[in-house]
Length: 485
Image 1 (cartoon, rainbow, N blue to C red):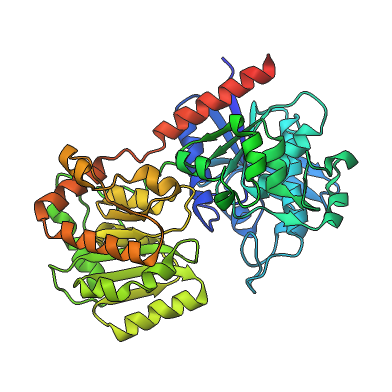
Image 2 (cartoon, helix red, strand yellow):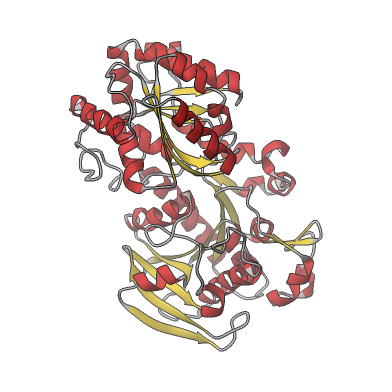
């Protein structure tokens, strides 16, 4: 029986290159799909860190001119992933990150760089590599948004296409003059093609022209149909809502496993929660906090941004401290927010500890040692940090939005009676509502038996990729059968 083949088209993938949750999803989903007989190859740009990580490699196609220069398509393996890597030095061999230079500004040729990603994906979909002709081309976020467009306008037999929205706030919009270099037919620049309010819209193109659309939680799938969350694309999404599915992300539960985690002070599981206390002690020591074993310890692992609602937390620090609680924060992003938290740590030594930047080990240690993890996002397509928190028994305190609402069961009276709560939700996403949630948390903390029950509930939650992989497999196979019919 021939294997079912999927080409995953993505601009970042863990563990090779990561700026956010997109990389985690792209890195974990192939293995989860493998349990369903799906062979996945991941197409990714040849950034320096990707090329350096390749073990085995084979050139499978050469381009004389790929958007401004020669390039080679490499078949290789790295980080446990089967890859196609676009080795195009004129597009990807440069310092900085995938999207921005060392100066923090977007590369001025991003339209060209990610058009190349979409065009090569289309080529592979149409048989560019004879040994791997996919049944489905799965495009992730705006950077891969042109892959469904190139396949749609190829005008020939093609694989099914699926466009996944990880965050609709990032859309890849470029001036109209960039259309000419894309190599698409003239009529593609229109309402039902890649044109978006007089510009070229990469995400819009994928949403308009893919056979199916998914996003990363059922809650977010509903929210983006509304003007306040659809970011200008709600009209298009409503018109194609019959093709839209919300599939909740999973977590790499082998990498995030408190029973085997070598990055934390002491492993533990739901049957050995007492061992978790050693992680709290070690975390406080690392952040210079007072020992005070009775203090409720809140943790944050987040980008510092308006979207993530960290300004609400900054405005609520007096409430948090007034409850006798402590805070550890790991994050990077907005300079003003970073300054506010660093300043608060300076004013309240022993009560607030802050580390600016990102460190994977510290992130694990916060999940293992904090009593509660705060995620006050204004919008959150899925969120992964609250999934890690559930896994590690750090009860999530989350805004009632998107994937946060889908993954955390609020400890209201009915949930307490049924014994099913796993954390706290708050709404609306405002400072007073967050402050009320902090007070609710302190009340729960005052009942140790209840707290331990909630921790066990949280740790029993299935946050793996199993459910999502089944849903993707079903969607992919149904689409492929429809295309073949």
